[in-house]
Length: 104
Image (cartoon, rainbow, N blue to C red):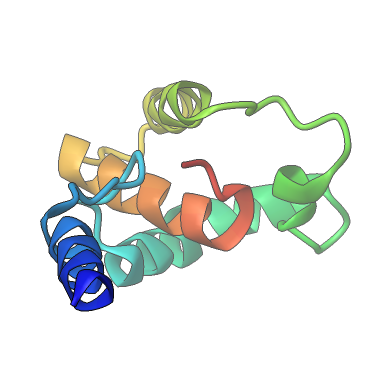
């Protein structure tokens, strides 16, 4: 009986435990991917001899945390005149985090 009671308590605590969301959990990864392909990939590929993903995977990458990723996206958006809305930047961050950074 004690085992059953303990099992029920554990199950209840798992079901009611808060979900820990990632830093860009409200972003749409698919929309971010489309934005990346349209607005970012060509520039990055040009800087890294055709492989734009190297900007994210190189050992000396500049982005070290979620805040840095958001700031870099905003900076690129402003400097290049991409005219992305804040929600577009969020989607892009969600895609990049899912694909490369894995920040929690």
